[in-house]
Length: 74
Image (cartoon, rainbow, N blue to C red; front, side, top):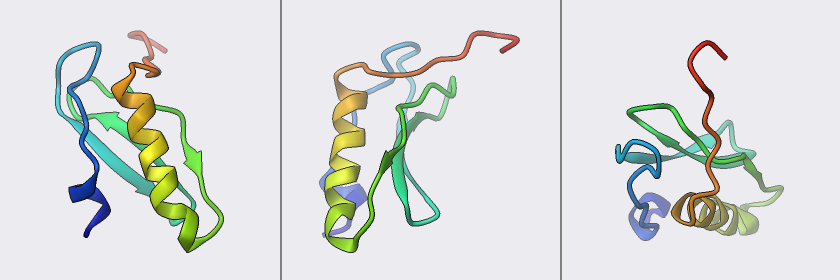
């Protein structure tokens, strides 16, 4: 099963927008709001075996509201 299909994401805790699970060049995952740009910290992985776990951790951070948001002008 594809990682994106296996992991459920809640709406953005700030604006209610849709979230997207993103992989960064094969070394980390993060979740980002497609509306306001809020995002989680990047969760690194160092092996193919750790890849899915890192995606799950990024999704968990998002779903419990551990999200970074920059204010206008930052």
